[in-house]
Amino acid sequence: MRTLRSVVLPMLLAGSFSTLCLAATCTPQFKLEQNNSLGWQGADAAYSIPLPGGRDIWIFGDTLYGKNRFVAGSAPRMVHNSLGISTCDTQGNFHLQYVIRRGPQDQAESFFSPQNPEHWYWAMDGFVDKGDLWITLLCIEHAKQASPWAMDFATCGSDLARISHLDRDPQHWTVQYFPLVPDGVKAYPSATTVVDGKYVNLFALYESGSRPLLITRIPLKGLNNPKKHLEYLTADGQWKPGFVPANAKQVMKTGSTELSIRYHPALKKWLAVMLDPYGFSDKVVLRSAPTLTGPWSEPQAIYRIPEMLPGAKRDKDTFCYAGKEHPEFESPDELDFTYVCNTMDVPKLATNYSIYYPHFIQVPMPIPKLEP
Image 1 (tube, rainbow, N blue to C red):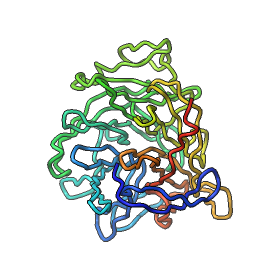
Image 2 (cartoon, rainbow, N blue to C red):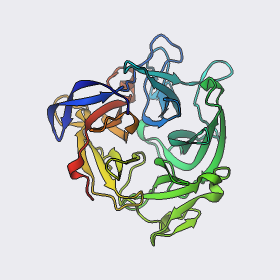
Image 3 (tube, rainbow, N blue to C red):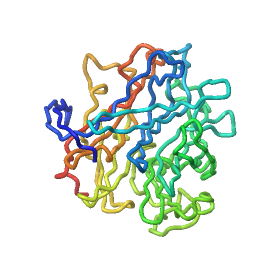
Image 4 (cartoon, rainbow, N blue to C red):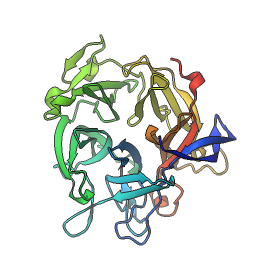
């Protein structure tokens, strides 16, 4: 917890505005960089991973860059992933260094790139083990059928990246890639990542039926060969080698491609934060469980996204997603999370600076409704 001051926040909760006095933390802000040829101009995803020594790594998806936002036709200037490194000073100020990989000619590159040039990675959640940072990578390719830019993608597998030498300049971090699940499985461990005991647990959305959330795991001592040591929880509650989604337990009947699952010792519960997975929703929801494998409570709406609420100010092209919690910034009585809004009308990215960056939100911890 990084509680250093108190603020009064206007909060849109349960469909109405209320003013809430919260013990606030060093509050993350995601400012766009101007007058920099590789300046950070917005991104999505925004997973956060605490590092030893008080730093946090932020994982960003499709990242706009340059001195300003630029869109040529329906193609924004971007790389497919980038990083951020944040710290909080003793006065409670948040500092964030954006990291866009620089190529041999000082050009912008994705920080993580697959060998197949027709594929790209969306970097997702991660964890730290023995001083190295591990990141789940969701393989993405263009959709088989023509689709709008914001929906022009299909999954094609998942891998793991190990990042070493974190004491160096991020441009000189060492990245190794490990295959995990190949294309065609239709469930790719990446949605969120949790170390619990001797295992790292990786959740996967099954792209079938009700699109349930499944769970896999890798023993930490087996990270030298993640694919070989991957296990999954079967429908009858057994852990078995490999990954057969059709035989897996549905940990949540309907999951999400990205979310957070984090343990809260004070509540003795696991909390899952995500956007309501049913269509283009305006709700950030919370679920709770006594164990990682459930049973998970029904979704409880904890926030209504202003950009998605009906009304004269609602932009019909806007949609929001990427809800996830950041407990390392929380005080005991609050829940902190981010979400991102995007647009179906790509040229609007160059003119609408109120979208396409993480919005950091604080709400009171909704303890009374956490029981499954």
